[in-house]
Length: 118
Image (cartoon, rainbow, N blue to C red):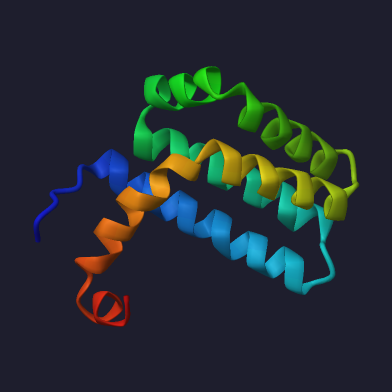
């Protein structure tokens, strides 16, 4: 494998996977508030383990146009407005992590089966 993953990054990928799973499950179960709140916690902690606390703080600090909607959406999910919160949070995520799509595309093309489709 071209990339060697440390134990901390493996934990981050696992937490991020749980976050994505609970987001999907919460959306399928008619925007269940508890599952979506748990998904937010898993995703944020997974990103922190994957990128590192300092790097994650720099991303949120440097791009306030994406950080504010992301955290407002997270707050709305926590105060029981899940549909509005998820919409605002998706907008914040796209603005916040929009610069990473090109890097993610290069990484995904190296995966054997998925790379063939891309």
